Length: 161
Image (cartoon, rainbow, N blue to C red; front, side, top):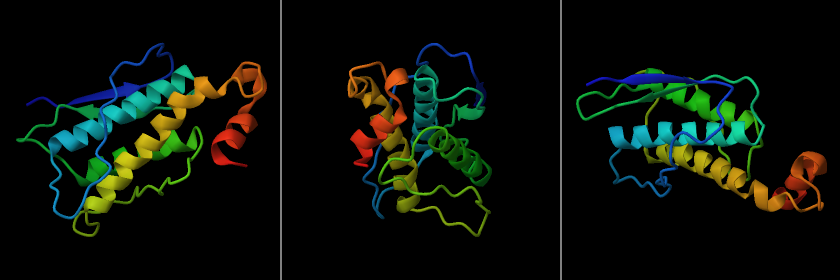
């Protein structure tokens, strides 16, 4: 089975992948598998593309891995990369209410993966996607385009500041 890495960089003019509805209701009886990790990486790419389209990322490299299967599933090294990617996306934009800090210090045998980690990964991406999807609707807050209106209006409308 081939595993592919892609480097996402400045210059994208469209969303290259479709958003896959995240699972944000993991519990202790659920089992995590390769398809779940592929979904997280796919949605990381989708949020990256939205950030580029909205002008929030100028130079940010995000490494995306796809092609995992039942016969190939790496873990701790990829968890550090995946969490770092999601952290970069949040840092380049705005951390929405409900955002949970990412863990970029996974160590084999020391860092347990459980349903709470799965919820954090998927929920943080969901929160960013939801906010980015609503930006065009919020651009009329001041009656001018968002680039003229400014980020403070978006923050005030969404964050209640």
